[in-house]
Every structure is written in C-alpha cells, then in structure tokens.
Image 1 (spheres, rainbow, N blue to C red):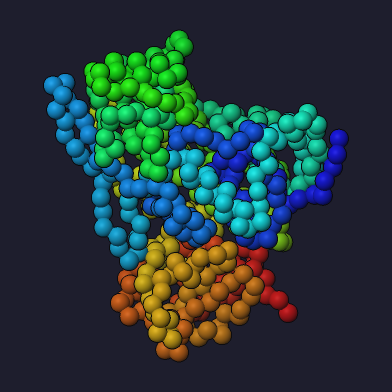
Image 2 (cartoon, rainbow, N blue to C red):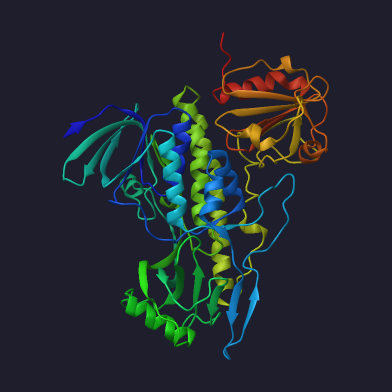
Length: 501
C-alpha cells in the first residue's frame, strides 16, 4: 500500500453531485480528491432537465452560459393518436422572467453534457476527476477518515482525509458500509432509457405514442447538440430487456406503429426499476452522504440531478466553514435542511409518476425548485420576527440595482462567489464591523447601491435601519433590525465569520 499527502475532503463519486461539491470546495481553497470507480465519464442522458433554481446555482459556479450553450429549451410534446394524427402542447408550463426570478424555464441538457461542463470548470479551478479509482474500505476516528482506494492496476492506496463524502449513487458503497438504512419502496414500474439515432424522426418535438398505456407507451426526445434521441418506455417487470440496436428498433416499430422508423445506432442504454427511497440519516461522524446516495426517486418531473446538485451546494460551504474553524454544529444543518427537501421531492416525483401513467405530463411551478427553502432551519434568524415579505431561510430574490458609480448590476452579481453578503437599508455601514468572508453593501443615503426601480424594496420588504444577511448558497440567513447588531454578530460567529484583531 502507498499513502499520499492527507486532504481535507475525499469525494467518492464524480456525477453531478460530486462534481458540484468539488467545484465549490476548489473555489474555497479546500483540498480534496474526487475519485470515480468507472474508468470513463458517464455516457448517458438519464438526467436531462436543468430546473431554474439549479440554473441559479450554476450561474454562481460560473457555468450557466456553457450549460445553456450545451442544451436548449424543451420542445413541444407531440402526442400521436391511433389514427396517426397528433397534437402539440408545451412540455413545461411557461412563465415570464421577473426581476426576482430571472430564470423560469427548465433547460434540456443531456446529463453527459452537463457533467462535461462541470468537469471543465473543475479543471479551470485546478481540480480533476480520478477515474478508475474505487473506494473499497474506510474507517474513521475523531480526527478524520482513513480510506482504502483501489486503482485500475490492482493496487490499493491508503488516503487520509478530514472528511469523506459519499456521492456514489443509489447503490452507495459508503451508505452500505456505514449501515445506514435506505427505506422506501419499489414503485412497480420498470423502464428502459436509451440514447439512439433514429433517422426519419423530426427533431422539432418530443414524440409520444400511446400515452396512458403502460404496455404500449414510448417517447422519443431529441437531445440538443447531438443526433440522438432519448428513448423512454415502460417494460415488463420480469424478464430480459433487449437493449441492442435490433431490440430497440423492434420496440420502437411496434409501439409507434410506424415502419419508416429504425434505430440506426445505440450510444447508451439501460433498464431499471423505479424506486423511492430516503436514507435514515445523511451523516455518520466524519462521513456525509450527498445526492442519490441519500435519496432516489422516479425521474418524473426532472428533480433527481437538480436535488443532488443542490445537496452539494448546501454542503460545500458548510464543510469549508467547519474546516476553517466554524463550530461543527454548522454541519448538522446540512441534514436538517436537505433531508426534508428530499422527502418532499420523493412525494412530488411519485405523484407525477402516477399522473404520467394516465398520460398527464403537465409540469408547473412545483418542479422549478424556486420555492425550496429552509424557514424552519436553526440557521434562520429574524430579530424582530417578520410581518411581511420573504422569511429567513427563503431563497434570496434577485433584483436589478445600480452601483453608486452609475453602472447597472444585479443582486446575484453581488452574491456570486463563496462569501456571505450583508445588505443594509438606510443603515450606518460602520455599525457592523467588516470581517473576512463577509461583503457589506448599503442602500440609501451615502450607500454604495441605489434601488432605482424599487425592486430590492419590493423583493425584500426591508424596513429602514435594518439588515438582511444572505448565505453563500443564496438563501436568506437572517433579517435583523438596527438595534440587533449584537444578535447579528453572534450569528456570524456561529457561522465561523470571526472578527480579526
């Protein structure tokens, strides 16, 4: 065995969750290793929807423009009738952008393209995925984790890390090794999903045949930036599923009733049983679960990849803060905040699956994840308690504002990065001393920001001589009045933002 220099965090699993966490740690200067047992990147499109809240996360991480370039908006759903005619309808409910919610529509991006963009960003920050390296064992003590990592050549390396994060999917080795229960249920639906070239099928629609029939249903969705369609179809619970070009071609021909369609090439294919499961707990000592290792649910509603990315986004700043000296209790809020969200997502995805079985594919605001928040979190502070407007724990709205020097900008521009942001309304800047990791901005006379359009005032309902504190993950940590600066100082200390003398 060989042993390398210890790292702060060892991440097992380089899917969307592991990559997001690695990017967030890299930009915070936290040392890590990101290992992936597969010898190459994931090649499929299983998770293809990027919801508006995840777009906000990706904007902060510096990848949104590349994600948009790799994808497209969802095409209309084209539902075919038995007589060969069809009707088109929107795949997602449309809504206009607003000052507080600039992103409203889901993006269609193949999972392999999303992960490629994330790997590129990670490389820019000095990180990389170690493919072909598998976590095969670990133990922990009060100071950290000692892990055994096997390489493709058969050797085993011992890695010492302060923290281990299991981002290793629904069959998580990390979760199993910890003995953490994964209760839930199998939903009685088995499906195939495949990426294939289907000549003769137009790419201007998401084609659906036999909606409402679990025996005959099939859909073919064009994947942007490729010549591929994602084929989805329920299949029998028992027996082998022929995922070859010939087998998929026969299924498409039989279920569409068309002899002009043929599967020319299969890039990737899988068959799986749909489950809804939630880990009993997300953390055991110095080992933490994230993404599908903590929760799995049916793909309906496009929630899986998005929930996993947002798990990692919640965890990253907390891990970095604890490593920098913040109280370890800060990390307890990861499970406190994210596990209830996963439970809600399981319920939503299962409800949408039941609707899909009946041919109802309508998706509304509930899938956009813009209303996800943590108002009952121990990190949510209101002093005094709010009577109107958003609550502590809610997502922090965007707003167009103006710098005192005249240039237009957005609040999201101020939030972008690994820091906390404190916004004051008609407050004295010096009443809250500066400290590392906190950026302070003030609206009002002699402030550095101007709210010309009243969008900040409308979005936050902040009274004069008051402050709103925005967390590094874009959620409101605290609302405090001008007489509660001592309370604010105590909150900041608890988050690891100490004054330097």
